[in-house]
Amino acid sequence: MKTSAQYVKIVEWSEEDQCFVGSCPGLLYGGCHGDNEQEVFSELCRIVEETINLYRRDGRSLPSPTSGKDYANKMLDIV
Image 1 (cartoon, rainbow, N blue to C red):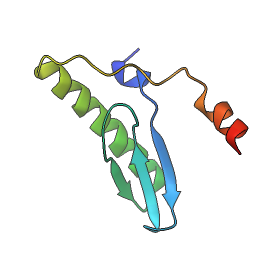
Image 2 (cartoon, helix red, strand yellow; image 1 turned 60 degrees about the vertical axis):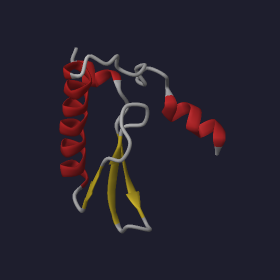
Image 3 (tube, one colour; image 1 turned 135 degrees about the horizontal axis):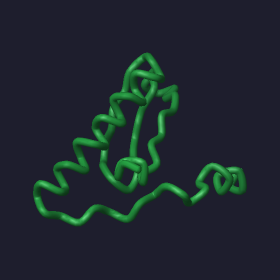
């Protein structure tokens, strides 16, 4: 399994921006955006890989993984 798979990646529609916005909470601030959901997800995956490589290059510890926490079902409890 790639290290990047340990981090939740979110792509959602933004009414305010009128585009898809990709983010990876817990690993990086910001993200990416665009008109095509699949392209935004692909770009987000590339950014996550690059971010992990930068952490490693700089000798920094990666943040705790965010996957495997069942966020989707926990979000249902909030609604």
